[in-house]
Length: 259
Image (tube, rainbow, N blue to C red; front, side):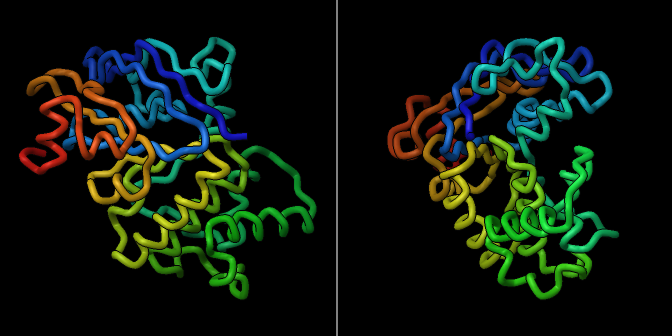
C-alpha cells in the first residue's frame, strides 16, 4: 500500500557541512511530487534521505524526522535495508546489472532480500513487474538476454521494473529521463502516470516542462546564498506553483531568470 511521507525539522550533513537545512514537508500518497531547483541546492541529497541512501556516504548523517506512514525510518531499531526495500529508487542513468539477464535483473531485489522463489513464482514476479513497467511485450521473447542489450529507454524501464518487483510503497526517481531521448522520455513519463495509482512517487528533475507534465505537487529547493545550505523555498500544488508561485525566487527560477 502506498504511504505518505512526513518530513519535519530535517537537517542533512556531509561531515560537519550542513548541506540542506530545516525541511518540513508532507509528500502525499498515490501522487507524483516533483523536486526542482538549480544544481547544488540539495534536491538529490534530500531525495536520498527518504530511503536512507544518504548515510551510505562516509560521514553523512541527518537530524530530524522522516516518517513513512506511521513509521519513523530513522528510528533506533530500523533496518535501513528494509527501508530501501519499502522505498525503491531509480537513478539518473539506467543501471541494469551488466552480467545479468533481463529476467535476473528484475529478480535482483528479491534475491538480495534472500527470498527463495519457486520457478513459477519467479516467473510471475518477472511478468508482473515488466508489465507494470510497460516492457513485457517488448522483451518477453528474450528474457534470458543481457539487460545491457536493451536501448537506453528500455534499460531505464527495466530498472523501474526491478524497483517495483519487490512491491515497494514509494518510488524515488533521480532525474530518470536526463540520459534519454525524447521518445524514451515520453515512455517513462507515461509510465509514471500509470504507476502513481499504486505508488507514492517523488521525482527530481531539472526539466520544468517535465515537472509540470508529470506531477501533482512541486517543491522548489534553492540556496540562501553561495556556500549556504539548501532549503525548501516553496511547496505547493504544481498548477499553482507554475501559475502563481508565492515566492519571487520561485517565479524567477521557473521563468528561467536563473538556474
